[in-house]
Length: 295
Ligand code: NAD
Image (cartoon, rainbow, N blue to C red; front, top):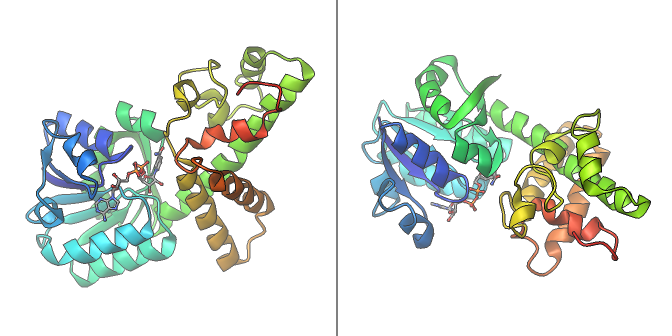
């Protein structure tokens, strides 16, 4: 297929590469010239946004937030071919996902919201989980692409349902990462070796993705951003965004999400410290750890 890929950051770059490696013709664009240049030779780098979208069978977006998605969608929908499909894989608010779905419907184009889980490791390995909102026929068309970039595809419902699932997932992730870091801080104070804590928790009822696959303590568990000086990965700023999206949705629906609210406050305070917003979200261990222990 001829695919336009817009947003070649931490996630978009490896996803676009996997599609190119599978034989698709990828024309990519990123606002940041350095991110686009890094993909030279892997995909075709577009001269501009329009070049990435015009005449493509599918356009995939992997953008930081709803405002960027809205801007890109407004610019490219009028340029897209009549039979083309627009797949947004970013994590954005449900309202923007539905607005973009309406814009596509008005233009008689197909579209899906298809946010992902699995992090940069999953994007690189082609093992992401896609949570999809939109109609069955459009999903059938897009499924072969999802199966290149990921291992699991879950049809969550109509437009916006993928984002609803993603927001719920990341509320769990944020809260779980914080309490995992609290457990390491407590273990330190109790004189319990961090490797032994990992060995127990990762095979016990306290296990989670935060502990088992993305351990926030350096040198413990499989490789993670903690082993790379907390270079994101999934940035603290992105986690603040997702926890705020969850709270917006909770407020909109009158849902009691006290732990999600507290997780948002803790991450907002952490992100406000100098140079912290760009660090991986697992760096919150440095804030929670006891002063006499290394991270
Ligand atoms: P990123 O900041 O590394 O990449 C986003 C890219 O979009 C950047 O390169 C930026 O220059 C580009 N961009 C911004 N506005 C643009 C525009 N108008 N036109 C073209 N390019 C534009 O972010 P990321 O970590 O790759 O995350 C992308 C999305 O995926 C986010 O919505 C995030 O919440 C979600 N996500 C990230 C992870 C993760 O582990 N990083 C995991 C799951 C989901």
